[in-house]
Length: 158
Ligand SMILES: [Zn+2]
Ligand SMILES: [Zn+2]
Image (cartoon, rainbow, N blue to C red; front, side):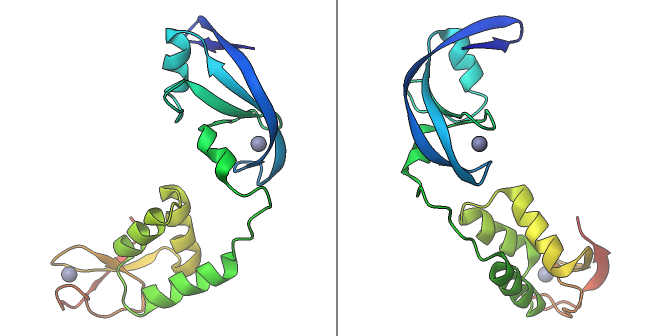
């Protein structure tokens, strides 16, 4: 298979295959394990995370590429309890937990930053309270900053 990288053709070789759980498709899919064969290929694969050997896993359904680590994930579809996560996030934020800390917690759990922001948006909308002192932001019902005890002012999602 050939990839085009800034006009340069890049060769990869297929070195295996099987089934995996594709994080993009959110389903079990066929994959081909590939290895990039030259410098330009490495330049290409640098656009997404790959193992040191320049190997990567390509989903045969959506065509996305992944680090071979993806194979270690469970084959069965994980059932993230979105409703429960949302509830938990909402409840913690409404009890005065700063939005910025929540984003950090979610991303520490391996959730993408954009997804974390989305979850928070779904949980508490786009209205925020902002601390005039430390600029941490809070759910709209929160009155005081957990960090410096200041009274919060009205604001918007950043
Ligand atoms: Zn896929
Ligand atoms: Zn503060």
